[in-house]
Length: 467
Ligand SMILES: *Cc1c(COP(=O)(O)O)cnc(C)c1O
Image 1 (cartoon, rainbow, N blue to C red):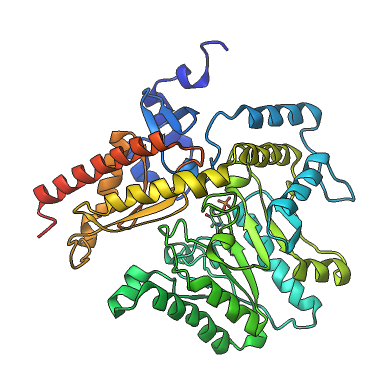
Image 2: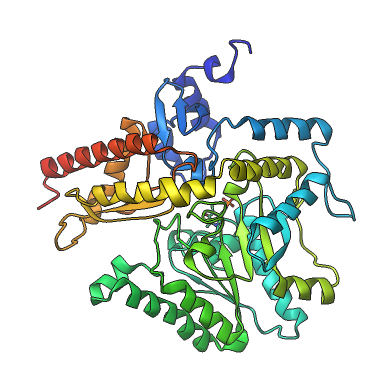
């Protein structure tokens, strides 16, 4: 390596100026970022990042919910290098295939629930969900029920940012930009107990049943003969780590079965061990017909996504299908598939799913029970290695801070300065650290989080936000 490594070749200010001049960032207010200047991340190792000023940062968000095996894993680097040298690209369109794509399909069938023997590859989670929309509608067409077009999703769901992904998602801020949702997609309320169940005095379990019941109401409103599928994240990620009651998903499953509606699990975050089982649907107790995956499939080292297609749908597509007029240039990209293979083998050899289930998951849960005692924390929840802290003004009543305070962003900026990356979704502070995290590292992370909560509380006292 020469000392001309890109990170060192310019100062932070120079990087920021060039960034502001040319790079339109995703989900970003361009003008305010240009004014503040972005933080330039230059390298990473394990669960830590370094910025261009040399600050070390604990990455409690795994990049963007994806770097599950942590940074710098040599097996993934070697797999990419070897595949780039052997065959950097070939497509899977015209009766061709590459060994990494075939082997990955085979391995995915092995690590997914028994109803899954087939996969359709995409380049991302959003594209995977576009595939879902086309595939479920195609399925009903082939079965002679073309009127089954409607896909039911949930408010505050996140399913990606393409036209179909953002339409399936239930983010109103996204719908107002670009004329979404596309036709045939409707939304029910999310299973967020704190906001919707608690005010009614319902237990979490009773609320879980009520929230699932909204699906049945919507199916009946639309007419079951018009409903193709229901899609949901086992645990909503970008929506703020909303963990549904244990009663919710089994009841959703029962309702889908009753009306013949396909059940789609968006496992882009929950898949590959995040919740303490290989798949979120295994933790939450349901058997989907289709599963979208991305992010953790390669631990984010290179882009890859896809859809696991259950036997119910695969049988129809394969036996009655004819040509499915759908696919992406990078469906089954050999380098991405080679990295995914190395990643999944590493998850197995390091026993990361067991590590989350038996060791660090319960350990994090206990740490969050302690944090729940903090004066600012109204509710603290985890599932596997996903967690959320709800910041409230009044711990006893659960009263929220005035929206104008933006308490989540206040806390987030302390996190930024203290060297830990947490995300703020409204008043919920969320984490999803790499699955390789150790107990000692969890102690460090929780100590940093506690310090940020203390600093936020001090702000609130000084500024009079608690009154
Ligand atoms: C991130 C995410 C997506 C979109 O994946 P991209 O790779 O960003 O397109 C879809 N669904 C869920 C649940 C996600 O978290």
